[in-house]
Length: 264
View (cartoon, helix red, strand yellow):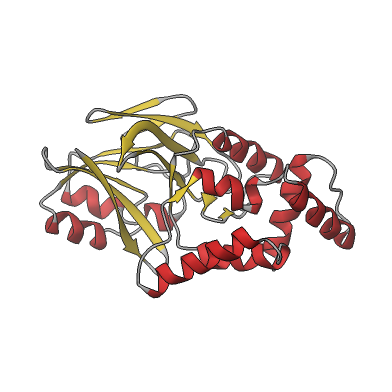
């Protein structure tokens, strides 16, 4: 009944479109540009009735005003404590958003920004539960800490890590190969990472996205979720020793990995 498709925007953004084809309705997540969304909706004979916002950055919100002009009755749902004020409904941690027969649970995930939230539904879409996670979690990576602390982002990712393994990770950027280059630099002998990198390279060469990811794969491969993996702990401690960083507890392992990626 429902399907999710990426709408490419800018150089590496994905605006996710959740469609109910029978009803002719669509929901989009983080529309940083309006025209790609409008073109896609027209091509699919869909009417936009809901926009979900994960955080205030303009590459996630820049197209909303224009879309609101095209679809005056659209619901615009986003974080209550956000700098982005053009919302029709504000939500906070623990709230539920209903769209058609789908229920999304809202979870606060501060770190990349302080207002960041994600939307999770256990309803299987394309055969899997769905997580719209904006810039909190990427395939092979996580968002930079523009406003929050490493401790906040660690706690946010720890919450997401507890979701079901078969959750599809609908992140907002095509950063996968860059994330994997960093991961392979840190763990050059990790064969699973090498195989996954090759798989993603083949997808990009074929013009295909590397997202959505699988949460099960992220737990196994993503350095930013492997703070209790002895191999990652050892690499983080070696990095921390070289950089003068304390790396003893899991959140400090995460912080060392984030520092390493920021300076890679």
